[in-house]
Image (cartoon, rainbow, N blue to C red; front, side, top):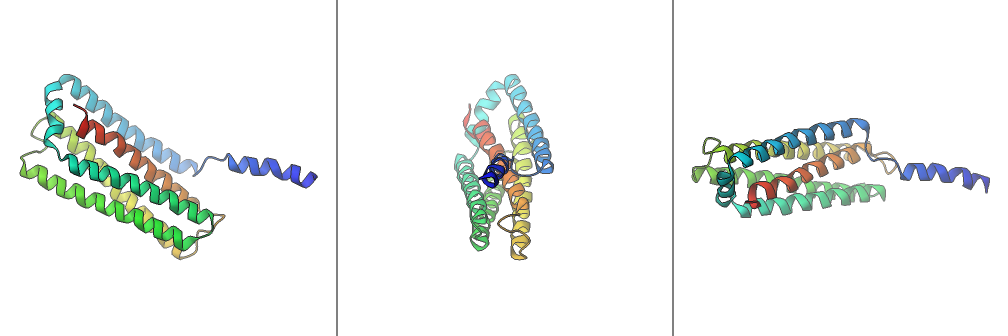
Length: 198
């Protein structure tokens, strides 16, 4: 009975532990601060150029923006399933979910690339007006984050293949999952601001 009583606080402490390590949270804070500055610039520019920002979203591809939103949400679901699989000691299943997340990341990049090409054919560039300058700066920054995040997930898959991660120790997977959710959250904010709100 005493052993159970002693074990209980330990289990309780573990269950309340914040996922990931301090380094990844510092990185996430830095990245979110960067996006926050971009959003502040967006709102300042919108206040001073309301007509341009009202018209801007109407010339963007809502289909591309919506598709990438669904892709990012799906990728976050796949990452969550990967973590759950690892906690159940199913590394092969975990890898399959992670590959699905990578596929989403690549598909996002492809759609964004062709969206940029379509914009160019419509004569939309950073020099068109302040709205498109903000649009390209914010979305290209996010584009880079998706590319980096996808590469990081591939690195986690490699480490899973070499059996570095176990059911008990897979902090690297948790860190990348947290980072990917940050990328997803950033896009969920970007999409309505640039594609929907008039």
